[in-house]
Image (cartoon, rainbow, N blue to C red; front, side, top):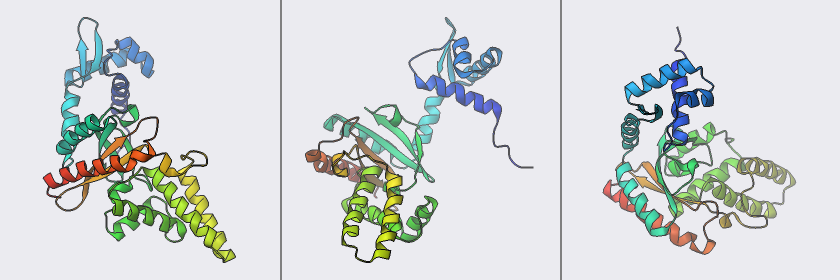
Length: 290
């Protein structure tokens, strides 16, 4: 007998907790939770009672109203603490945000996913607990220092063809991140690869090779979307600067990311900001003997 892929009670509990997490400063009546989640009122009331008993939800007896409970703080802290260097990186995150005046995040890797471990001064897309797949080019900061074999396995998992210009472009992107010691965000990195490919195409003479390169370029364009300003360079639309933190085995354990917000970083300040983020990440790595 195979394992069940869904447990209704767990699914319902997650829906309720997700709702409460959307506005953690707000307390909801049971009837509100039932209406907003589409649950039957009696079932919702019973579920909230069970979650409150477990400490996952706090019940205000004067309402009664419900909000996120203290047990989740312990679970979240334990989960984040499972990433080597999180505590040290978190302290550096606050220093960077305070010194540079931008938002900052600490992220970790779980398999082929990144998870936001903590953040300050960012919008809800960067709130702790957020997850996203490490699918090329996103998440390259965690794989750029891997062996060639591991990098190939990841690119194959990401759906990148095993040969041709597309694979070479992603390999060059990882090499560029290693060389400079930081990433400018997936879309910008891929945009820079597109610029390099465009220069290559302009020099291509063989018609068959040109057709193949154009096909590969189209694939990269589908992956990247359009993020650079019209008529501008990807370097003019940098919203993220990410530097790796290494453990004693030389593995990227967590990453520090400076976040510009809705407007990109000023072009003339990107290098100085990147240098500061790299310095902060390197200090954490030294503490970890990385």
